[in-house]
Image (cartoon, rainbow, N blue to C red):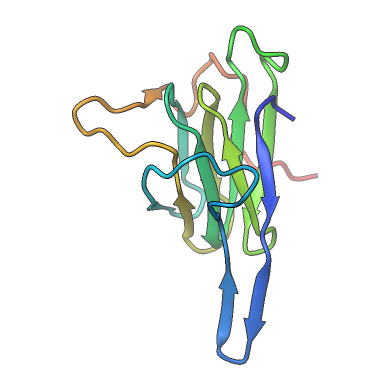
Length: 151
């Protein structure tokens, strides 16, 4: 696993009215600080990649559908430099995925319906100076194939 990545298994509490799922609490071991909370969606088969942040850590939870989240460690001084990790998160694997700053990440909706990801980053979005550094989804700088792997 890429150095600095953390996973929290989420507890789903169902009853006859529906369900409740806590995602991130201020007393969690992996909680750092609160920046903001936002939702992003991806349509089936669509890819949103690649980017990293210099200042913030991300805390991803997929609350609807399934997403394949892919991380690439491009950090020069990391013990896991060059490593790629895949995580399938969502309705069939309820986890919080903490993505450390400076780690490239992206995701693809792998469910038949739109996937919805909630992110609680450690920093708020700065509209004048965004903390986002991007590469195209199909860049040669990251050796990753977003195609489905049948087998």
